[in-house]
Amino acid sequence: MPNVKKYHVHITEKAEADVASVLEWFRDQEAIAAGGKWFAQLMAVIDKLETMPERCRLAGESGELGLDIREILVGKRRGVYRVLFQIEGRTVHIVRVWHGARDAWTADDV
Image (cartoon, rainbow, N blue to C red; front, side, top):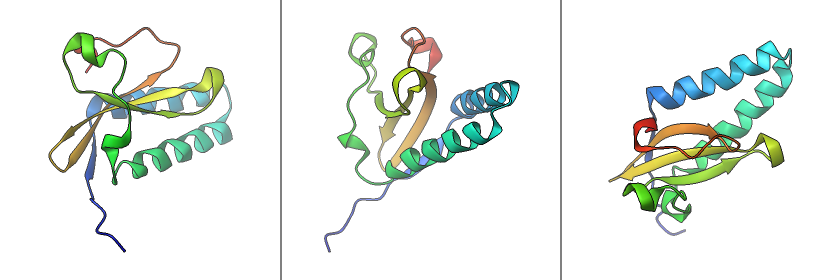
């Protein structure tokens, strides 16, 4: 079996606050089970970033802001979230978990 490149995944405080906000929304909607399912999907996607995170595309805003921010999507249709991350050496930094319907992120958001 080939040697698989492993990365350490670090979730920033802003990204943790984003996740907490989404889970709070699920609680407010009295949809605790749906929130748990969403969180499990999110963590499964984040776990995939331990191998080959460079396979994910650059976020659309990345070029115009001059930042190498990549993204991977979680969810479907109106419930899509963008997991925005940077790769530095062997570390993947999750910088935001951004709802797909929100405005584009800016350098201040990272």
